[in-house]
Length: 507
Image (cartoon, rainbow, N blue to C red; front, side):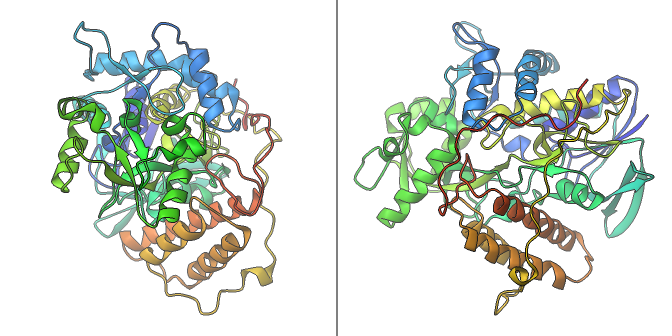
């Protein structure tokens, strides 16, 4: 079978290696260089290593609780059940996870986890360590790699995906395939402040939308609570707070306890909103105080962060540093079953591009690398299997918006990517209202109508960002209550709800 994997993060490379090892002919297509994207930037680690008193069941419970209950329990069970095998695989491939002086794997703790169960490598360079090992494995396996090649669209014939169209060095071409695995990451470039790299422009989700694949949960965008302001913003791992750092307001008070009894270790959406509210209230950034950890411990446990903060003029071992929330992770995406299969035969999605049902309304810290490894392997294993029938309970489409409500705003601001990012940050960010979402929808739809035909990579990316933005805004309008990362200032929080039903048959 000829398989095209689009993307070269942990999910895509795991899928590519497993597919190659199963005897398939694999081509990896990646917009940048091999191993680009978000994976090498991941600082926190991989959840799923259980010590005394911990278990897969406890990990699953933490995942569901952080997600506001909006998970597919079967998908969560799959994540934690397969986690040990995928961690063992990473070790076998050569990922050097950090160890204690006695030689045991060192486990860290992050927010909303009830136990220390997170493995890290190089202190705060876990993603880079994993990416390097997987890229080397792909090179050794002589898997075909097309770098500098951007996905344009899916080729769908007679109801089945038969390949993709791509652009490389200005030329458009078609790559035929029996199966396509989308692993293009999220759409962090929708926002003015993001921890995502420039290539995170929603390419896979947008292509799937245009092809007619089901998507869900695009209203759930996770904002990481602690990023160092600047250009670009720089992520300050949640693991810092897991090691004992605290958040302080301008008076030195630990203000997050006003919002949640777990304080700095509350779920990310709670901490991010608490930071934003306090910064607005005091008219200045809040600060992350890691001084109690000491210079030696910070340099040893967080060498990358230590280097960057000092390069930006902060001695974080002696002074608190300013922090701001930033767009970090897209919980929704292309709807899949527990084998990565979408609603279009031949199309799979894994990693941040997929909506597996694992993350619900708020991703639990350090579940993303684990999800990429688990579902990347499962998608490859399903390549030779039958395509399941689609069950009746597909996500309901957002309600049709009245035509007059979509009249373009007067005056319509001119489009550029910075204007889109400001609009999404202001109206589809940490705090949302129905009127703000409608305003954003009218603007995005008017921009999309007025866009000239795409002629280069940048304009293709803009087309994708507008498509994903429209879908995300419509999804946010269709959910008038607050839950997890989706916070509506004009409505009360949602009552507890049952978990999502699986979207596809998963036998």
